[in-house]
Structure formats: C-alpha cells, structure tokens
Amino acid sequence: MTTVIIEGLGLIGGSLALALKQEVADAYLIGLDQNLDSLRYAKQNGVIDEIGTNLAAVASRADVIILATPVKNIAASLQQLTQVTLKPNVIVTDTGSTKQTVLAAAADLVAQGVTVIGGHPMAGSHKSGVHAANVDLFRSAYYFLVPSQNTAPLQIARLQRLLAGTNAKFLQVAPAEHDHIVGMLSHVPHMLAATLVNETTSQFQDSPTALRLAAGGFRDMTRIASSDPQMWADILLTNTESIQQILHHYIADLTELEQAMLQRDQAALLDFFGQAKVTRDAINPKKAGAIPGFFDVFVDIPDRTGAIAEVTTILAQAEIQIVNIQILETREELNGILQLTFASAAAQQKAQQLLAAQQINILRRA
Ligand SMILES: NC(=O)C1=CN([C@@H]2O[C@H](COP(=O)(O)OP(=O)(O)OC[C@H]3O[C@@H](n4cnc5c(N)ncnc54)[C@H](O)[C@@H]3O)[C@@H](O)[C@H]2O)C=CC1
Ligand SMILES: O=C(O)C(=O)Cc1ccc(O)cc1
Image (cartoon, rainbow, N blue to C red; front, side, top):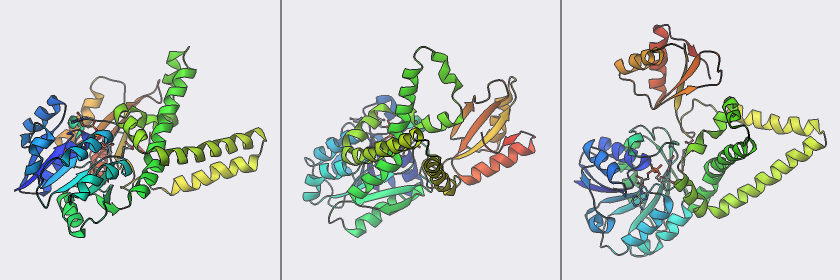
C-alpha cells in the first residue's frame, strides 16, 4: 500500500488526488483540510479514502506527503513536519505557486535527511475548491519539480512515477529560476488583470453599467482576476523580489510607450505593437502546455428557451465532459455565444463534430 497524505483538498489537491488514484493501484489517500465540507465531499465521492485530523497526527504513516494549501500554510506545515518522526523513504512535496519561500521553509526538514521536492503544476483555473477538481486538469501541462539540495535522483524519479497519472510534462528547475519564470508568466499577469478591473471600476464609479460594455479584449485579459484573493495575496508576499524586478521593467516599458505617443513617434508605436503581434501570433493557442491548457468550442445560441440544454444534452449523451461553460455577452442584441471548454483536443474535436452534425452553428472564435 502507498499511503499518500494530501493537505489542502482544493482545486489542485483534489485534482492530484484523482490523478493519483487513477495511476497508483495501491494508493491509500488521507485528506486534510480546514474546510470540513470539502473533506466530506472528497470522502463521499471517493477522492480520498480517509479524513485526517491534523498533519502531525497522521504524517508518520505517509510514503508521500503533498502540501496543496496556500503558500504561507505550506511553509508552516513544513516546519510542523520537523517535529514528527517520518518514514525513512518519505517524499514531501507541495504545489505552491512560489518556490524560494517553500524551499527555504523546508531547510530544517531537509537537514534532518527528509526528501523535499518542491512541485508546481502550471495548469489551473480561476475556480477553486474540491468541487472544481478534475482528473484531466494537468494533462499536457508543464509541471515544475524543484528539488532541494542533495535530493537523490531516485526519489525524483519515484515522485514522477507517482504523479504519472497527471499526464503532465515534468521540468526540473532551481527555486530562483522558477520564481522568475512564473513571476513573468503568471504572477505579474494576474496583478495586471486585477489592476485593469479595479482601475476600470474606479473610473466608472458614476456609471456602474458601463462595465457591461466591455468587449472581448477586456474580458480575455481579465478572466484571471476572478481567482482566489487569499492565494494571490500569498503569492505576492512570497515572490516579492522577482515580482518587483519585473514590475520595474513594466513601468519603464509603459513610460517609453507613453513618450512615443506624446512625441507622435509613429515608427516607435508601429514597432512596439508589431513586435508584440509577431510574438503572440507565434504562440499556437491549440498547443497544450501553455496556461491554462484548455480547449474551447464557441457555439451560436439562438435566444429561445431550451437552446443551451440541446447542446449540453448532445454532449452528455456522448459522455463528453465539459470543464467549463460560459455565455459570452459580447454582442448583446444578437444571438448569445456559448463557450464550452473541454479538457483535451480529442474531446474538443468530438464535440465539434457532434454539434455540427446536429446543425448547431460552430463559430471559429468568439
Ligand atoms: N489555482 C491554480 O490555478 C493553481 C494553484 N496552485 C497552488 O496550489 C495551492 C492550492 O491552490 P488551489 O487548489 O487552487 O486552492 P483552493 O482554494 O482550491 O484549495 C486550497 C485548499 O486548502 C485549504 N486550506 C487553506 N488553508 C488551510 C490550512 N491552514 N489548513 C488546511 N487546509 C487549508 C482550503 O480549505 C482549500 O480546500 C496554492 O498554493 C496555489 O498557489 C498551483 C498551480 C495552479
Ligand atoms: O487560470 C489561469 O490562466 C492560470 O494562470 C492558472 C494558474 C494559476 C496559478 C499558478 O501557479 C499556475 C497556474
């Protein structure tokens, strides 16, 4: 039996639990969470086998311990584990979005000879909680592994085998390198998304309905502003240095752009937007592994009762799982657009074929 403890049964912990169960035949999962409803839901739905009381009480039984709470709590749990006698071969890993803080908090545990391998799956969602957990969440996404000093390569290979059910692509990096990469690709973009929403709300204070006019670009850029505030506060407080450096570059870039505009420097403006377009066009949106790694189908929905149910029934009958469903109100007087998100390219393609066969109008994009 492989006993796995997962602390934090939210979106990420819950999805990892499902992937582990699928891959590791003898896995026995003990779940811990401050939210009792999540624990009960996880037990009732077979996500875990046992509800744990507290980490210190169950840790000595574990072959693997996965910490999947917000980052500050991960650091606290790593400290807590120094007070427990763990199995000699145990692997302690986490899913936190920042790694220098986590690995620094693990130093005492590592000094005791415990294997600590930081982890960070680069897939997720703006949704949270165990109800949003999905066995396919990490498929084809990158999954950073950040070993501590002196980690035995055999232990890294063992962890990768245990996590093989995620179907993720593992990538080993050092803590500082990790924090800089995700600072650029994830943390600062989240700050910009939230700033866009807050600044716009504040400027539209006297016309609260103006936000409804937001077109596709604003919606695309701000989806991630719906993410969990606690998680993002922790991320900023634990990757401060990398984020500050990146922000300095952004401020300089925006100032330069402002100057080019004020000086009517058309060549500089064309160069600025041209460079961005060339790079953005080269990112293949269908290529998995980017954040968030989702596969969308956009459907034209006539404004009549039951139209959405027709679409979802066709997909349900074919047992195609919809990861997310959203009505886009980009064209208010016309038909609505239904955005259906699937977990894989195969599911996306099958859905497209089935809907088209039923004369449902598939749009190339929203
Ligand atoms: N949401 C995302 O897209 C991604 C998140 N991560 C990281 O994974 C970790 C978990 O994130 P999510 O699953 O999205 O969050 P979540 O909010 O869905 O789940 C976190 C879970 O931890 C529990 N929890 C919070 N504080 C606790 C404490 N002190 N003791 C016990 N349980 C506690 C909560 O009740 C919740 O069930 C975070 O460190 C986050 O930075 C990593 C990759 C992607
Ligand atoms: O939803 C999105 O686009 C994300 O950016 C998901 C995400 C959030 C936090 C991470 O540490 C990694 C991935």
